[in-house]
Length: 591
Image 1 (cartoon, helix red, strand yellow):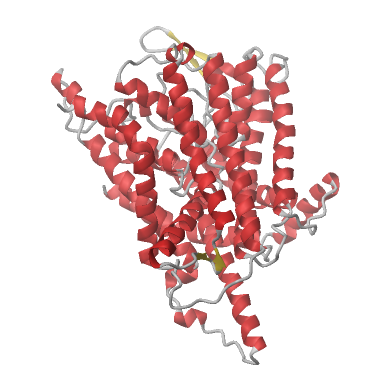
Image 2 (spheres, rainbow, N blue to C red):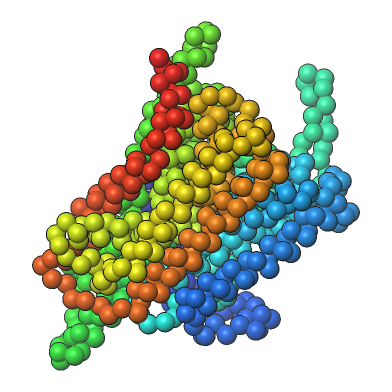
């Protein structure tokens, strides 16, 4: 327990400076690295014929995002299909099959990184670099760019300008992802993570058998897979293998890498909204002939200055849900497995099946909850071997898809629930709901409801299709409750763009490759387009003055309301199917 507490406290300290830096990038403010990065960006703009000062409407921004991603999907698919060429292919890996290529390229372009293959045997080094690692940068930058545009729309500084997609894509890549990846990659190499272009090594084990030790540019992939909340792995065993994650220090580096930027997005949101309020206050004072006195730092507490008022309430709501899930997962794994105890195995250390001894229960539970809360998808233990309730937590957090999330997704989805919360509270007091000084009306509520419905629809519809068709049933290798949990986890991971898996499914088939690919595609792009449409609608509205009936969304009480709204809607949507899967399995196991 002390390990978990210290890990969280260190994170809360680290996320603040990173959040402030990302805020400066998003708001176009000066940073210490501008003299270097301005030149780098300038060269890229010149080559791409991009004018970063040309703003875009939300429609043009969304179209540019989808078109750019579409071109990259096509190029990446071609590379996977021709990867059998000798270039950077010392292990002689053959071309990837059509449906698997479709699933893989959709997976990595949507920042999901679900793998229906093992990296060490399914991809050449050329594909690992030009497709996998490249997509990890671009997909993460795409998500962050969409989030920043979304925040600009909510801040509402202009009526029809959410920024320039290409400029955002470049700035996030060059100023955030690349420098942090270089630093983090070097730290991982220092801890023993492999980084070379050598062929796999065959060694003699102490048992006298042969074993293949995978080689390749592992560290380069590892750092961006966590920093960009990508997931997946260079190896099939992912971050549970010492080649990807050899020490507790490398484990913490990977843990913080996937936590920092999603948390930073919330701080960016809080500060950009605060900037808008400052401008409004200054304009109002100017109209009344008053002088604005800068007393903000005197009146406001430390957390408000660090997170912004609105950012603080969102961060708190996310943190509460995260801590509840982490506590349940840690408790469940500590209880052990009664089935193993019945055959004579001691469970005094908790349920250690599928876990690395060097990490133990605490760091395994922390990694498990984090990777599915921040929608990363990397694993340092086998989720399929978690206890039923322990395995329900990562599944539930992917179903919620609001607990920090990756590349800004969690923030954008939580704002949808914030709009829903103010709408419900407004109905209770008979007042038109407001959020961030704008009235929430029919158009926004319809789009919000549609955005919230899409995610559970994809999970439940595809799960029903899988258990209701012969092609789907053929991939389920575990009968009963656990088999249903594996199916739910697969599509929850796909729709949430997470990428982790319960495994146990025979998923490298036409059915699973296509259906999971569609869930990933629609789960990514439909939500982004709808959320940008909501931001575009709100930014055109006039700000309204606060009154006695205004619901303040920057308070602790609103954060608690938000948590209840999220859990209530999740319970109504997912509880029946969770009762048939992990809850039924738990009751059977402990009967």
